[in-house]
Length: 70
Image 1 (tube, rainbow, N blue to C red):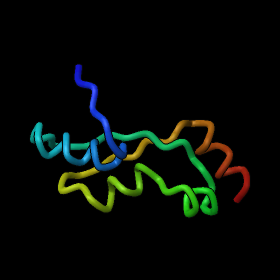
Image 2 (image 1 turned 30 degrees about the vertical axis):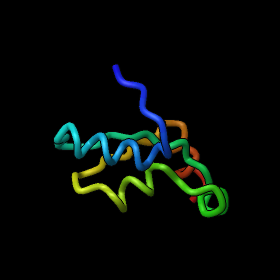
Image 3 (image 1 turned 60 degrees about the vertical axis):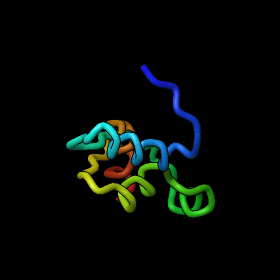
C-alpha cells in the first residue's frame, strides 16, 4: 500500500498513469450542483484529466433520491 500526498484528483490520475491502469473506478458522494461548483469534484477532475476510462459509481441511496425527485 502507498501513501500519496497532494490533491486527490492529481494523485489518482498520476498514479493511474504510473501503474498503467486500464480503468479508474471512483465513487461519488452525490453533492448538489452548487456545492460541486463551489468546492470542486474529485471525480469530475479525474474524468476531465485522465487518459484512461473512468467509471463513477454512485451509492444506491443517491440514485433512489434522484428518481423520486424527478
